[in-house]
Image (tube, rainbow, N blue to C red; front, side, top):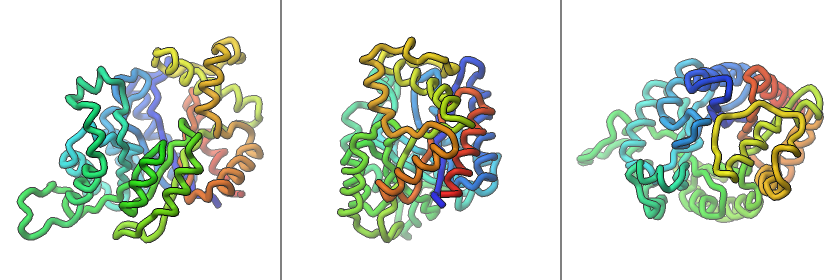
Amino acid sequence: MATLSILDLVRVTEDTDARGALYNARDVAVHAEAWGYRRIWVAEHHNMPGIASAATSVVIGHIAAGTKTIRVGAGGIMLPNHAPYVIAEQFGTLARLFPGRIDLGLGRAPGTDQLTLRALRRTPEAAESFPQDVLEVQAFLAPAGPNQRIRAVPAAGTEVPLWILGSSNFGAMLAAELGLPYAFASHFAPELLIPALQIYRSRFKPSEQLDRPYAMVGVNIIAASSDDEARRLATTQQMSFTNIFRGARGLSQPPIDDIESYWSPAEKAQAMSMLARSIVGSPDTVRSGIDALIKETGADELMIVSDVYDHAARLRSLELIANAAGST
């Protein structure tokens, strides 16, 4: 049986506001817990009207409070936007409230545009200290020493599990060097997936947190009763990617019957390149796709993005995915 988790985009749609998106994310977690998903993560994005998870640690607390056993975490916190000390305080607090259930995935991208980066009071150069910042977060989450003058209260000693997120070889090398689990974002950057996993596994150094490589692969999966229905549901995500290229990030849009009328050939080529590893279809199609992906990558875990517009249809998609994976 494949180990599955969920990356929830906390989508604000044309039919929901931010509050609705946040409660929908919590509802997804409640159902996912019952269906056997291991974890649900949310990601830090800023100045994006269609995504309501900018205050990521707050959203994690909201989701964790509505669930009992599923792990809840960040996929991820864009560490260059923050002081490592503050992130340790936030996630250590979450770990005190929800012991044994909090994950902290760390990325070095800004999660926004350059103009918004200035509003965050950060500079593009902040990403250069990412490896050192990861170690600083880890140190603040570790048990405090007897003479340690600066402690992250109440985080010290919680030892929240860290993950390195990546969409290039850099993250793979860092995760391997630090002996941390690695999550690759092939749900939007599939090209370097296989080389990155090879680098991570070949260079991995055991650590106190992890004694052998552990690789998570992000993948878009949309399931429905038939291939045709699933392909129609997938047009919501295809339009979202097209809008990125147009510089028009807006609310999530309902699916359409003819995606070819929405995008130009160039936009289609760009979007489908980023969505190249998507699995879209009936339960049988999804089962085959999951089998093939795990066989190709040796992934220890899949992080599912099921970007479906209608909440009930998204829940159905995630349920079908869980059932399909359970029979692989």
